[in-house]
Structures are given as C-alpha cells and as structure tokens.
Length: 66
Image (tube, rainbow, N blue to C red; front, side):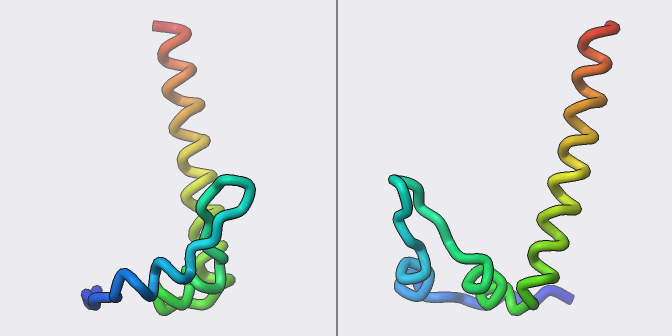
C-alpha cells in the first residue's frame, strides 16, 4: 500500500542545487524523500530507462515500415 505524506516545499527547495544552469537533486536526497535506499532508486531508474528505450525502438520500427 502506498502512503501519501506531505513534504513542505521548503524541504524540497533546499535539496535542489543549481549546477551549470540546471536544477538538480542528488540521488541520496531524492531517495530519502521517497523513503528508499539510493541503490533501489538507481536500479529503478535504470529499469525505466531500459524500458523507455525499447518502446522508442519499437515506435521507430513501426514508423519506418508502416
């Protein structure tokens, strides 16, 4: 079961850094906000990226041959 919690904007805002004109959040801070281990967050990111790439390849394939 997913539990919803409210995190004050100030907490999130102080975890966002400006690096080379890009707003970024460190993986450890993001993992802490979600209540998971950093490794678990990174593993999920890689999984999502892999699936997204496969979907893109399928779309490109169908676009080229249809």
